[in-house]
Image (cartoon, rainbow, N blue to C red):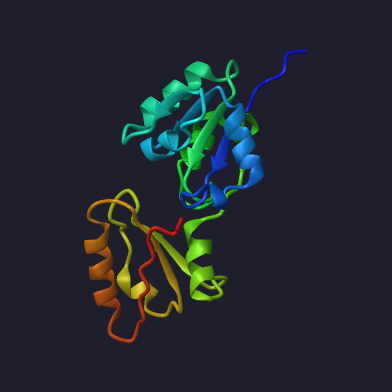
Length: 180
């Protein structure tokens, strides 16, 4: 009976080897193909694996994965944790959960809240990572904690408008370069 190779979605943490789990590192070391944003495929300089860079053309990346599925050990590299607003969702939607293995990672949200010494069990999440969110600012006025995921040009402007709409009674922490 033939063994089917799953597509492994690997949570790479906030960008430092120290925040990656041993299983994530091992999976990446054993992969034949690395798929991810340019910064992730470039991060693993010692790997001899083929590299597929994910750009705004998500369908192209999914087609590249499909062309190799079942014949190569594919590691899809995602920032933070795959369960928190990542490229994992389009991969799972296209290939199905049964064809995927997911290795969790440490999210930037976990690191940020830990460094601030705050419990984040009651935090609300907004993703401004790929585009301006279509959020009703008023719906967040009662939230005690809000985590906004950013990382693109223009996100800071949207966040400034969002914070301004919340009013003056909020403390704001901006966390970046959490790998350091």
